[in-house]
Image 1 (cartoon, rainbow, N blue to C red):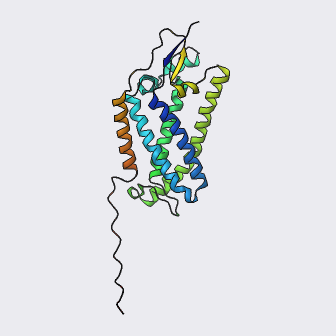
Image 2 (cartoon, helix red, strand yellow; image 1 turned 180 degrees about the vertical axis):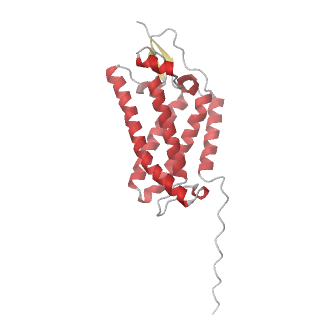
Length: 232
């Protein structure tokens, strides 16, 4: 059976995927070790917030298989996948559910981290927007949600290994090179997601990073002037 190589994943989607993986690991390590690294944990969280904002926008204006309209599955697609009859490109229905779950959980983790505190020396950049009780509550959920992220990431990696060994389908390589070998003559290459779409998504992501870093908050009051030292 003849095959051909077609474009599946655009470059921005691939960069997002691997940057997110790196930053999630960095956030895990710095958060787990704590101490002076907690500031880097916060920086990683703000960067993740920007990446997630980019992906949400890219899900509407990116290329074919990066768009939510293409890969968000309905019941018919899920049932077809269970019966082994789904043969599309991009995320399969179960993979799409995994991606959506990860995005939702990471968005909550990022937002809760922006208003969290550790009762010692760290306060999220948007801590001033909520009460201390609310911050404490979200900080607790932020710590608990870490284990949910670990479970979802483990399931994600497990599914990749299953497809690699059981179905001989390498899902990692297309996310690196962007292309995939297909035998279906009707399979279509990814379209759209050009330079203008990337600039728009990047601009929105940078605006979100600025806002997440406290850009919309009023500046802190100036420090009280020091008392004059007596001349005697």
